[in-house]
Image (cartoon, rainbow, N blue to C red):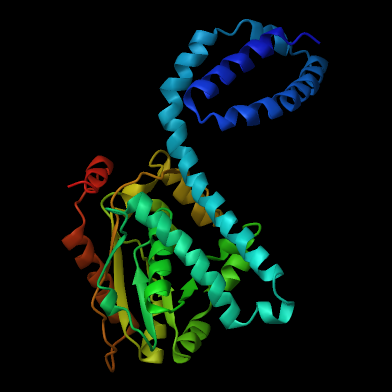
Length: 355
């Protein structure tokens, strides 16, 4: 098999890697190259069977054009790759939890005290990431932390960004500073993500019914919920519109358990990660028909984030779920109006780290 054309292409890529990426990646490349050649050999054989001459096609490729296209589209590739890093970090967290679990007996591994040790380690990691990537002087800002109860139940109601990384940071900081782990209401699709079962279990994520959530509150827990859910995550925009539809379940839980609701918003959360606006009506239609969260996400921009925890909305005797939902919505919209520049702008949000 003649590898001349392929070797030229691989050689160009190798030069780019060596010149612009950390030197240690070159060692990885040298290890991977023989396997890539073997894969190429099998691919050429398969394509020849169906009449496609891959070496001939590669021999006609202009490497200067490839180089130009590579650097032209590199920024676009990066903004779609960075969200994948969050997924890798989540899987790194899951791996740590499995190792942590393996160090203890099956019986002991599920006790609260031992899992609190794992939660503290994971929380420290995520809070550190928030300080570096979205903080100022290595400090991730949470304003109004005194509004979060040190004890007793409450409904913690927050705006849902495209990827709720701001909530991960917030949850980590609250666990470190207040020593409280919340019960988090998550979408059902999360239970179908491979490997996520242990992560959801350790961090008390559930898609619980109104009855179950009410029971959590009556047991003295803080229940965190984003009423907008996936719709708000994917189909809201830089104007930070709330997309709650007719969801009032969280309000019913608060009324039944007679607990306050705490409105929460993170400034610039949609400048950190955004859903692709192109073909949004199609993706919205697809989600409504299939409930598949397939909207492309881009970003990972190191913009300034500040989380604002608003004043609790106290329990009011005789209030309806619809009225309480409206008050909660107004509470979050007030935080948005007060702290968020509309429409959001990625460059301005980045400059806020230095101004």
